[in-house]
Length: 539
Image (cartoon, rainbow, N blue to C red; front, side, top):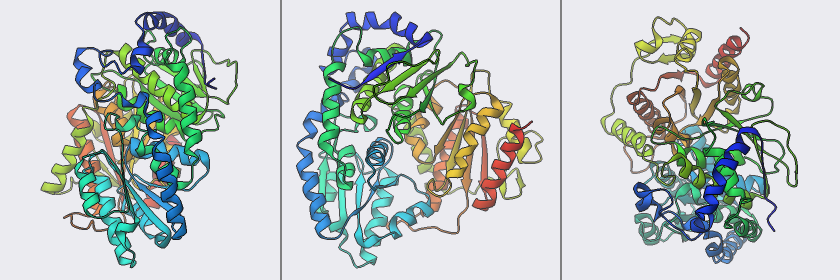
């Protein structure tokens, strides 16, 4: 039996009572596991027909385990025991959670910030192998990382091809070029699984297994969960959780996810991408908000559009919070549970949970910036180490950083949220994440925090395709470090700047308010921003 449990109270329980009987009557669960692509309506049928391989991929993926273990042992015999994963979105978030929970080392490079790229390249290169994960190979972040690693290995006198491991779709351009280049290993994943649902495909398993995770245990957890999630009955946990996520009335579309002892490290970050990218479209969606303990958004009384979701310790039978969801279970079991629930929520919201129509817009804008190389937009004003940019309608007569932040927050609607987007090294500057609870305290509204460009493959879809109630604080930074991208006419520094510029441009085209802050000095600029937010919170 599965160790999964879902506890619902208040509005969440009411939503389940209202929707689950109909979902059971139409056999949603069994049809989902039978890969019925008609469950989300005619407009979604084509995409859904290509994206349901995840429901049974754990079973199919077992054949990969001996190959992964054999490769890990071969690397170990050569003194290679440090693995860097270059991937974005679902290609990186799942293995990051799996390896952190298992307590094994995996450097996840899901950034184009030159400082972070340099750290990935320079640390213990002699014992490093690079795992490049991309469905097509054309993703700019992963292609740039591949080029940089090839050069770093060659510069160190190491046969680059012997240190390169690829995960891609079968028959993709990357599959062919990697084999032609003689890379050490090329693993192909089920092409009928989208990136954010790919945890139990080669995208999730190869990096996790090479880093030392026991994959058989993980896949056993998924199989146990599948046995109960495919059943058409009123106790189906996937139906219950999905109904709570997408079926409250009125819709509580801000899902605040807080870990209170689940034992799974970073699970909320993985769930954030799954939910936001799957549901944030057609002007609706559920915004996942990853929060820590004792945050303003969870104080009583709760806002009417907020639904708390607690990740609780295994075998917890009761939970006292009102209008809430509480979920427990193994890592593999919970991954499948939340995938099923997200599919259910998509059905109730009336959207296609398997496409991401607004992700490409930011990519296109980035390409245009890199090709045209326009002159940088002049700063409207500079305050200390912070250059401030934004439209005159937004900034008005603001004369300093405090006034600029206040001007942005004045645009926040009663049912809105604040999104902080930080485009620089997420490993060094974790203190900047303190801006999230500070802005939540100032506004008494949900606030999210995303590291760029990582969030572009996650909440970036929701920002453009979901309800137009967000205001955006974009933070970029100058750096003394920059790196060439071999064979490409731009540097990593230019790339991350273009990604920030492109995303801001698309947000503004969607009439989303964007305040852009560029730090001329990272240390003093971060301190300055936090000082301003602390002062505003104390008013």
